[in-house]
Image (cartoon, rainbow, N blue to C red; front, side):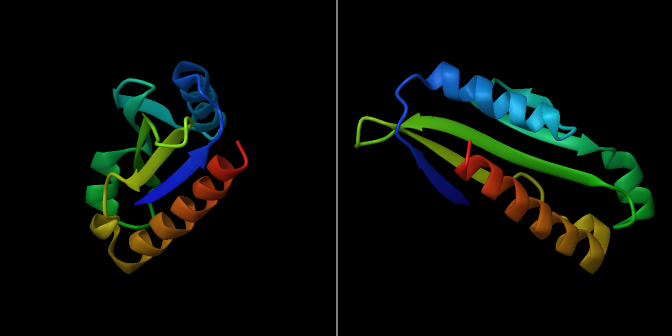
Length: 106
């Protein structure tokens, strides 16, 4: 889990930016809302059948008020990548790092 602090105060505006970032990267909101949701891409069924060679990622995003009058983006993996074996776990870690950097500069 990573906590990314933002100086903005409008949670809905930040949630819209996060949503647009994920959509532009090929993700869709699979569960929840823009403020507290899970974004995913790829096929869970294909990943379970074929393994790490099939693209599948799932990440949770929660936007919450922080003590500094700003907002925090709490970003975490919503799946382990284990179903794809070592290859799947490695791909998941790389994608997590890539998206984390995008959220920092959002």
